[in-house]
Length: 76
Image (cartoon, rainbow, N blue to C red; front, top):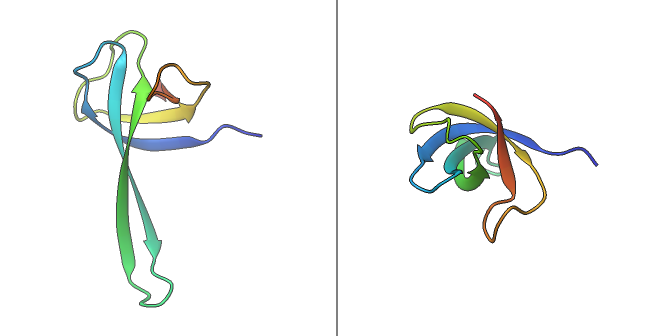
């Protein structure tokens, strides 16, 4: 099964080798036919602490790195 890839914006890089990425998705409401925006935060592994707040990054699913990290940063 292929790994999912998501794009988002870094909202925090306070922890060592970890960034918090805000991923926003848009979809059409099935009944109201209105565009709805939903967002979710993912904690992703950043090996070299290369990314800062505000950077646009892509994250990919991976094996669990810690209790909360199941994603890793693959590109900016």
